[in-house]
Length: 75
Image (cartoon, rainbow, N blue to C red; front, side):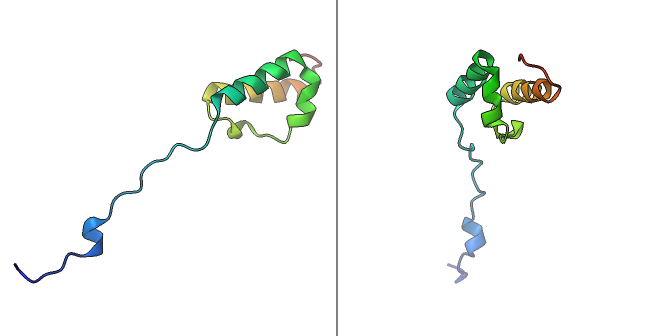
């Protein structure tokens, strides 16, 4: 034995990359509901596309918001 105590940093473990909370099924349900009833987008306009976990869902929601902002009655 050398008499040297291990340093706390010797045991440090890199933080694990955690998946953020998400529900792909909820995203699909929301986008589907908006396709069925475009007027419902008024109730979810406070959502940002970045709130969606799936990249494709972010793009679809962003396009929906863009259409509504442009005055389209249909999505």
